[in-house]
Amino acid sequence: MSEEPSELLAQRRAKLDRLRADGIDPFPHAFPGVVASARVAAEHEELPAGEETDDHYRVAGRLAARRGQGKMAFLDLVDRSGRIQLQARADVLGPERMERLLSLDLGDLIGVDGVAIRSRRGEISLRVDDFTVLAKSLRPPPDKHHGLADVETRYRQRELDLIANDEARDLFVLRAKVVAAVRRQLDADGFVEVETPVLQPLYGGALARPFVTHHNELDRDLYLRIATELYLKRLIVGGLERVYELGKDFRNEGVSPKHNPEFTMVEWYEAYADYADAAARLERLVAGVAEAIGYDGELDFSPPWRRVTLRDAILDATGVDILASRDRDVLAAAIDAAQPALGLSTDGRTWPQLVDDVFSKAVEPTLVQPTLVIDYPVELSPFAKRHRSGEEGLVERFEAFAAGMEIANAFSELNDPDDQRARFEEQVRYAAAGDDEAQPFDELFLTALEHGMPPTGGLGMGIDRLVMIMSGRRSIREVVLFPAMRD
RNA sequence: GGGCCGUUAGCUCAAUUGGCAGAGCAGGGGACUCUUAAUCCCAAGGUUGAAGGUUCGAUUCCUUCACGGCCCA
Image (cartoon, rainbow, N blue to C red):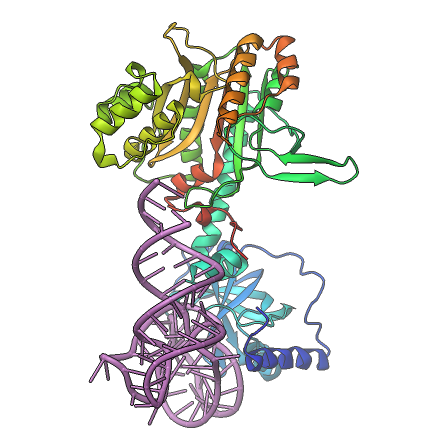
């Protein structure tokens, strides 16, 4: 951003110098007593056009537009709550301060003392009695009317997006409300919020490739966590009974409209519960979030959500019965025969990968309304407990989908340490066969399980995707303030 | 990794078959006491993403690269 138009910059610099020459601090330290500009309108809904009041307000924000240059002018001030029109009158301010106010640049931050009026054309405004320069802007802001449209600039310089586009401000306020609503409900349900290591000697709890970093003093590599699962379950072993963590996970994979290498996840674990309890809690939680933010879109989050087994979902969509094809080659042949139109390449894919492929391609995009897909094959689920039905090779697990996207993943948590050891050993075999997303063997976690973990229901939910769904955005980059970009 | 599309003034966008690179807003000068994409007059603003190539002449055609978007794997 160094090659700016020197003329535009020089003019703003000149105005900065002029302020200083006139003894005005262009960067004062504070401006106490500011109220949200939206309050002015909210408190004068009944004020007739053309009327003035004696109601004084102090507001502050960024100068966004200016109309008129003579003895009366109108300016727009933008703060977080919205936009308010300022009326500047030479007979109120005097010629000198009038000239100074009108010579400010769009983008300058100012504070204003004024009284509420409604203009003759009917807009609630503040008549400026006094104003203060709060920070001089030395660069031109985006277009006052078109805003900032360039996607790349919006992501790389989010501050400009927030300055220019009020939808961007609204979106990230909405995101904060989503996060707060999640915390509020889990807190109310008796969960303890905890913080576990981001830097981990061994990563785990999901099937993904990690970022690796290095601790100089300890002279050892550490991994950025891909999930919080294993640490949280050790806290369940420790007797905290209901725990959750909401924070960033990191996965070393490609970026896409649905993937950012760092993303926000909430995971919770509840002792003496199972995956059905997790499902009920998820339904209530998401419905509560939707209510808290005033969601009024196409999706119906009210419980209970539709439930379908993974087997039936795939069977209905493709005619392939994955549980009748537990052999890798048999399943590959069934997929090739049943769905040439899918264009799936089955070469070199393992059985669990094939199941995942066919589901992702044929089923997932169709899951628009909130849906719980239940009862997964054990091969896909190294931390889920075997199904109580006794059905061979099934675990108690569900994934939640909405808007064609996975938003949550939950199990009846595996607490039999011997079974868990066998699952780790299976993952090691997958890794040896070339699966670089396989789960590494975690002896310390096994030791914790050997001390005894109560039956536990656990769930992880992607916060970014939840915000996408709640806001109707189709790209994760829209809901992450500073998404990952190439240099 | 592959395919397609895009990159022009600070911002939003034009530019005919390959023929002097334009407008609005913003910025500068001026007029204006109810405007709200204010209006009016004047002047200014460009390494057309980068590097090569074809051509008398390239924003336009070709090649490579960078960044972004969408789709696919």
